[in-house]
Length: 105
Image (cartoon, rainbow, N blue to C red):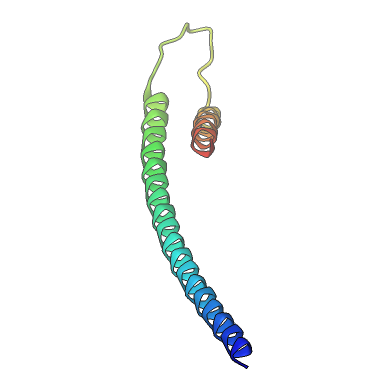
């Protein structure tokens, strides 16, 4: 009977080791999850800052482009405000897509 009792003690010890190992794995997973969440939050803050800077830069560039007056020959007709607005929107779209492709890689 002592052989059977010894086997039960061995199984009980093994069970306790597995439980302890499982708890360690859970704690490690929770720590890694918190670390990853912190890194994601930092990345989101950086992306918001970069997005804000790009938006301001694009607005300044669009404003400078809009208010820059080139004196052209009298025979050439000046583009309308609508044409200028469309041109500026196209410039902004190009800059924005270039910025977005750079941040996604």
